[in-house]
Length: 163
Image 1 (cartoon, rainbow, N blue to C red):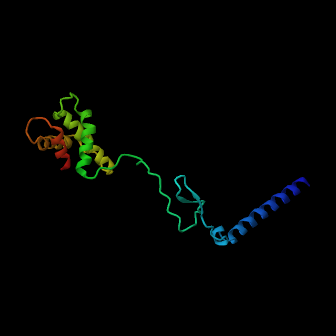
Image 2: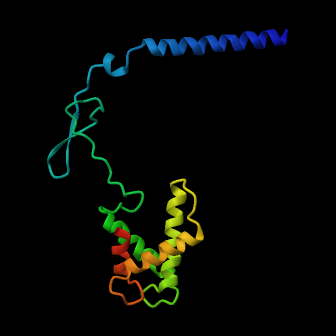
């Protein structure tokens, strides 16, 4: 008997909830059924009259200004040149092991090998075999060392990476 009364109660609640949803769908929105209220005015401390209690649906109400928001991250660079410059600035000290301000052959090789392998990996391509990479690094260093000083400065590296 107790079970039947619980089931009957649950069914009644479901019916009420369902009919409430149906009624809510049939009832027009409040702004269609209520006349728009005229804004009331109150004097400001300096004697000016300013509108208050303006309903949100009032088309004559000035649009609310959005609060300024801070960008969620760093602003993206404008050009590819700026992107390369940022990478070189950020990563150069990591690869300049002797902190000389320039990359010797081995330091340069470590950096460009890492960059090339990561690029290939991102493209879903297999890594370059060691012997091919060694030849590529040799040619890359010769091209990057434009002043033939036997090391690569930040500006030479930026020029090389710009391709």
